[in-house]
Amino acid sequence: MAEKEMKIRAKLKDGVTTVKAIMYHEMESGSRKDKETGELIPAHFIKEVKAELNGEMIISAEWGTGVSKNPYWSFEFEGGNAGDTVKISWTDNLGETGSGEAVIK
Amino acid sequence: MKISRRNFLEKSFYVGLLSAVGIPSILSAEWPTAAFDETEYEPALKGLIGDQELLEGHVMIDAPEIAENGATVPVKVSSDLENVEWISIMGDKNPRPWISRFYFHGKSKPFVSTRIKLRESSNVVAIVKSDGKLYSSKSAVKVTAGGCV
Figure 1 (tube, each protein chain N blue to C red):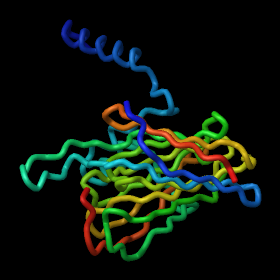
Figure 2 (figure 1 turned 30 degrees about the vertical axis):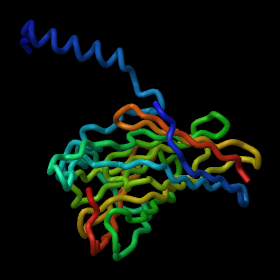
Figure 3 (figure 1 turned 90 degrees about the horizontal axis):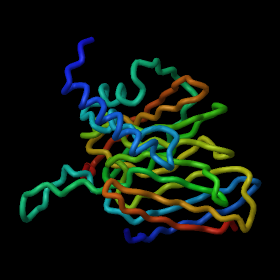
């Protein structure tokens, strides 16, 4: 499956790393109708997300259709160092995947 | 309990399916289908936590009092508890009230900042699990233009 784009950055301050990310995804709920055909637009949404620090899991998440389009996600953790890599990856309900990486600054 | 042959075969099929699929690779728990499938708040909450008691306090929600656009409402949730296993977010008037759940591993802080859809003015409910206990809090958000949920 095609890897989709993501914006991600990670910043270290006073021992706490703050990660901010935007994942580009429709997050289609499955209950909206196509304005022209009147047919329901099939659900298409990110279901599972994980964030790793140097390959080790720090946060994982389960999402439904109530998460906004192009999901924004920010979180914080201790123990990161400048130069470490934070990676976020997701899988949606159709099995498509996306990921993005940031080096802690 | 009497198990018919057909019933037995069905059960075997599902057990087989479960072992074939296994536990979702990136998660420590199963995706909460029981909560997601419900279209009313109380059943969705029950789908998430069963009959377990919800305690008050220790959950902080930062959400706007008025949201101009229900399609993208910024919400921050945090907790002052130790050993937070997860934080889950719900919207009590949404067509699917259960929205998300975040699991905290390692040295992550019990904090999440996200954006959610709210169909109409409603309560954002946050539930925190810590040391086997559940805590919750809610925050009323007035939505002036509903989200396409």
